[in-house]
Length: 519
Image 1 (spheres, one colour):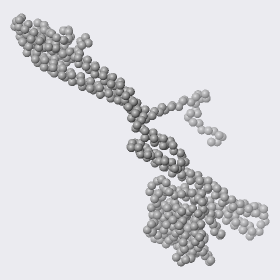
Image 2 (spheres, one colour; image 1 turned 90 degrees about the vertical axis):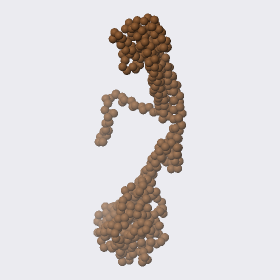
Image 3 (tube, helix red, strand yellow; image 1 turned 45 degrees about the horizontal axis):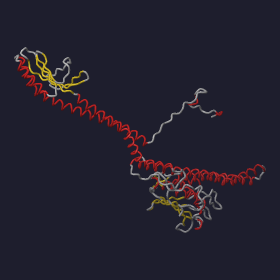
């Protein structure tokens, strides 16, 4: 920013002297410790929950059996209680004593209370007389009565009405102390088991978690041992038999593979940038020096003869055009090194050839460029790159295919072949010796009278290799001139899947003679 003013962030707006709040430190815990802690907490909770259900079921079962016994006992005692009621109403003292004895003997370990008009007759364990008892004559179901810290299950059986019309009732009591004692003992045992389950389950969880995460720790060690520039590193994914760990390993290996591809492309881009700068420095030094010399001549000799001035200005113009041509070619070469298969599309080579021929005729009036090809011949490719191939082939033929009497006709043929598409550019010029045909694709290979930078056919070879094709220099059928033939696949393999395309991106740094696409 102007004046060296730095932008103010949210944290810089505090008054002077006010310290920034400390950052929160996130506590991390190993996965095995998390599993052990979870198991150590979950297992006791499950023991307590299961024990509570068991205690509840056992208590309900014991209570049910007690109620069954209580009903059976009440059913057996009901006839004796009715006989006692009749004896009391008939005022037969001896019969009353006999009935009472029979009733109490039949009660055994339960409490009995017969409520008569003259007062209750009771024996056995039961709550005090002042404790209110529920009236459940209709349901006949046992209920619980509590008093003084004790509890009883009580069932009521109606005996009918007395002669005076008052109701008579039989109540049978069963103490619940034994049932409650068993329930309390069972609860204590569940609690003790839960206490022992805490350390045992935590230890077991730690052992199991350690065994389970062993493959994960091995994966971490392999990933930690990876060096950024180690191209011969072992595979980070080793099958472990644990599905989740194997999925993580495959994902990590895939990410590292993409990282390697991007790292290689970044390294190639840096190499290309360095090579671009070095090449520009080397190749522009001569033309710029020549232009500076011409400018010095014009400045030192203002009265230079007109024809000499015209010659110096023509030399300046040629140097300027050479610099522009060199920069454009180097830029295209660098762009080719940085290209990949992602933007590939279907390109019609016949249409492309007609467009290139039309533009060539406009740039060079009088040039004879014939395109042979009809219909459509489509391939997967970069349209600008393929257009560059056709433009440079036609331009090279127009420049170097001149005969003794001037330019010769240029013939461009596009056709489909069994293994792809073929482009042929023929001229009737002096031709290229067989032993020099591979050299014409190397960088800065210029003929003695070439006005270019020596990169036209290098760009052709680069784009052909990028499109997985091949380029060949041969003789035309007539035996006079030069034929340059380019064969391209209809489907580019790298256009169907992302990743490393297997093509070198070092045309600006590659040593001369290493042009694999030239046959």
